[in-house]
Length: 375
Image 1 (cartoon, rainbow, N blue to C red):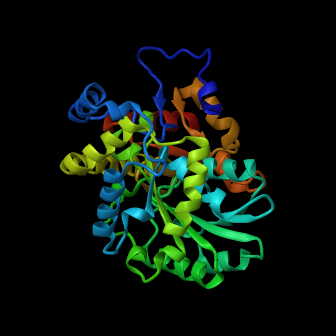
Image 2 (image 1 turned 90 degrees about the vertical axis):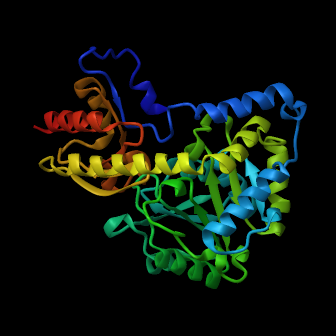
């Protein structure tokens, strides 16, 4: 929201329109067939306008359980699934069942700022876990940060903001650590549909008693362009679901009926379409890496799903640089300082580039404008 305010009062000439690489969500509406299915439901299904079950509609919960069981080679029961108003709410519900003011949660840095903000709002300390080469967190380093008030470790893969895809073995080591220390492993896979790897990205859901440790989060917003309908999912033990239900009933009563109808229809009918979306996003990733890697002094540290984490060569902090870029070169990007602790100098040296909504010609234009900025 802060970055959007930078656009106030700025005009962009017709021959140099704004290139917005700040947005981490689809800007196009859902495909026509999905919109039609939702419109038909709005007209013909009275229950689409009423309260529904707090934990979500049974048919969508069952579909999510079946899909995650199939995709990960494990067993997820519908009773282990909650449908939430977006993945952000899934995270908030999860944290509320785990921790209270004065507790601690480990977040790899750079972190997703909404995760950090929710912890701050609850008086829960976010313990930064700096990532190493390839923007990957180190389980051994995390182990040293666990204290008596630590309640969870949060992993986001593919990562926001870095795009890094965490190897299955690495995720497994974090599972072992969390299980050994008796804390939760929160696995946010909002961007799982755009993972470049074939097959399951990890085997956690196939492990015995996985739900004693794992809480897995998902979003339908990115897969089916349902951002405005707010549909996410939370997968955890049935015992935790009883607590999640209390939170959801208090803050929302139930998730959107039309959003759930759209998500279920998408799961059943848009598999091939989604594969095409994934291929396009990965092509844009490759184009972004190629274009920005050719700029003198610029370095793409990691890229995947929607994002590239890019080191800039200027002496100026990204906090002021990102704001100046709007007027000087017509580019809106987010500074690394938004994703890092204020005392971490790495924030000042990096930008997050969200390329998923920028086609190949505009990616080339982005590189040209960044080159002019630095030279």
